[in-house]
Image (cartoon, rainbow, N blue to C red; front, top):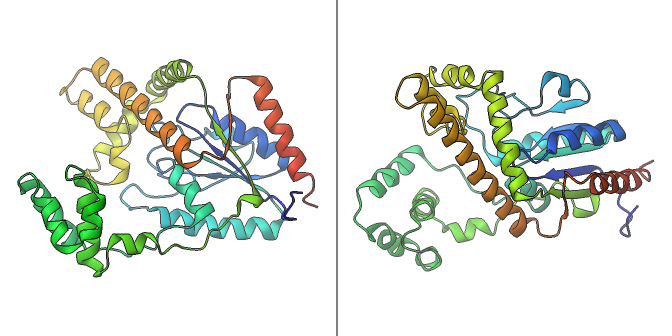
Length: 317
């Protein structure tokens, strides 16, 4: 029990791709008789098993797994969708007296569970389409000028070259009549307090992580990643859908069409995965700075963390 008197209900495991999160999540789930909950924005998709590095059938058989592979590829899925499903799971787990092990590489999922999420409304598709087209055709600086005419607060905050965020700010001010700065201050209620969770970021040595990324992608190819990418590509889905942006999908599919060599596609996917891992690590350092950091390849650190978790949860009864 901690000083606030609140009992822990969840272990949160974040970390870059290929850092060993799945192994630790299953180990803890078995120790605590817990449910494993996915917090990775790609592992939710039903058609993206291999390339998203979802737990294998054998791994899933060792503990109860939730929010893995349950979303059709053509269905958009937002942080709010995840929060809604996580809230239901959390309620069920509390009633059943079961802890949760929440594991993944999508830092925004963790932040939204602990801090709440900006209550951003849906923007009409015609508004979004207008500003997407405008951004493609506009002269340099015109997009930022357009924002300044409508929302000076956000224009002052954003650099003229930050096209993506400027477009988002324009969509929001036109679609809702309120500045993005206002919406950012209106947040949903956090689902977990920090006192109710034990939190860790897995932070392996960069060179070791890169080696693991390379070896894992080679294994993915052996396990059928090319076939998975081609099957998804053949659906003819909107390339702007999140699932179509998964690393490896475009590269491998184009290689099978003769647009590139397979060797180039594999190396390109490995490079993109390394860059993604770097972005994840940067987010975790900046946004999850109060979380414990451990090297997953150091047995002593893993064992010490497992004991910390077991001690924290031993007071749940």
